[in-house]
Length: 119
Image (cartoon, rainbow, N blue to C red; front, side, top):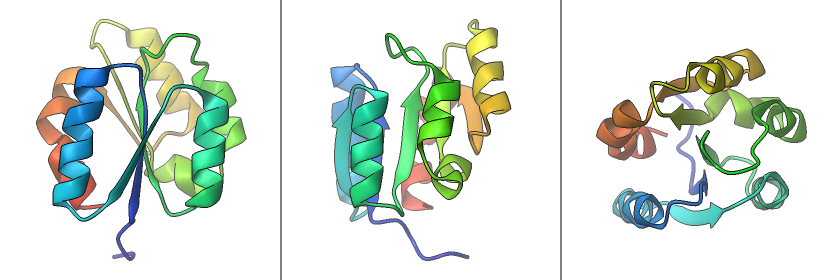
């Protein structure tokens, strides 16, 4: 097993979810940073290359392929992308882009604390 990440980056515009994820990160002893754009992700990952990246595929203007091209491969392989189960194209695009885990929003909500703790 690799050493645990110390930083969680959430790409989302959902303030309620951001608060929830922030709480789980704090419980796991991880620093947390919420961002709203690919350029913000790139900056946050640049400062914290071992970060766990959580990606809300419903983020306005998000092009997951562009995100994948903008971050290191090891970060992408650890990334967790999620979205509504009915948005199959977005979920498939995240899989095709190389995100390590792709799941429905419901699955993410049920597993986020474990995803962070196990990172």
